[in-house]
Image (cartoon, rainbow, N blue to C red; front, side, top):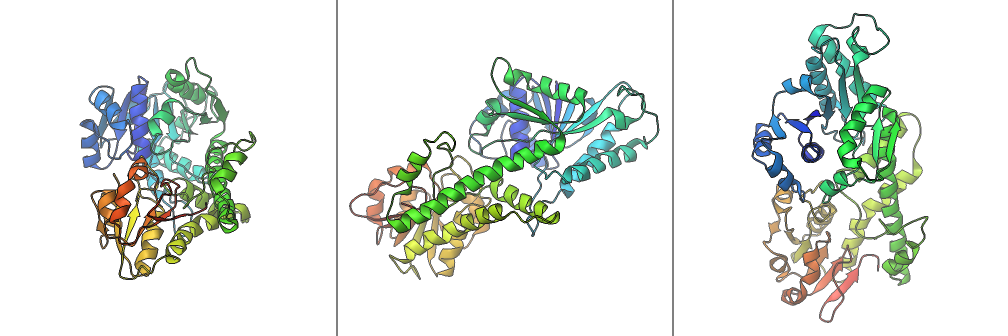
Length: 447
């Protein structure tokens, strides 16, 4: 199939590369010439394992990038993968997504009478926001051709373009650090559309991925599909905060939370995943999606108490990490190492990283902060240019009075003798990645 993907950020780039790998002809559209150039050269604009290999394989063949939307008119379907950033009140800003939808509508206004156009929202938007994007799409159609006339003939061909143009939703469930594998072996595929022909087209798109495999396909309407996405992330975020709340209690009781939750996870009604307590969740999905769901609820008069508590517990964890450090050393004027700057291992994404409030708390205490991360240093340098950055974890630890482990990169588990170079070997572990051993003062956040 011929596919266009509007937006070449994290989701759009992964989508484009994986669809090309599945055998489709893909055109990636982005307004940034540097991103377009990188994609055409086979390089990803983000750090994501396996993505560069796919781009190198298909760039210039089944995948090409451009700043022009002209290819939309010749596509079987067009994905909108535009960012929907959070507003100050936690809601989402769909202005950029709506603008892209309008541009796509303008291009699709030239469809022939026997053609249908399918536009698919891949961006994460709240159910009420879908109507806003749909309106922008058809405003673009009106701008492009003034095609408001024509009678529907009842079969979706000929007549009014509105009868031949469908807006669907197909939310993503990708984990950063394993997005390529998640796309190629999904837990589920959710297709949201009110049109049978659009559903058929989407199912054909995913045929190469589901062929011969038992992958559940959820077929529903556009709004329900997006609510599934939000509910999915809210459930996972709440599970993490529950594990953290219980972990905090375990710490106070002198009990190892990891031993407790390992046993809890054996209950098949609960499962073992997302029960690792620690410094909290971050990234672009859980915080943004939970906040958006809370804001959308408030807009219709419902205040979601459990989701509010999920956020409150998550926001408290970095301060608890700092309080454990305070109990061992006064950091004012002293060097403190922050190990891990990305919000999780396997990515260079620092959005909502728990390292951000940790660094802020250290600076408020007057510490001289030195950070280290295998891939996210330059991104964090843009956020905190005033702190020092080390080339290795060992360099960060040298002469430090304390070390805070914020991201569970595997390399931190093998530091061993590097702790001997600290001025005072106080290690506060927020991810249970360091082993207790002789010669260091070790504190686990919830164990």
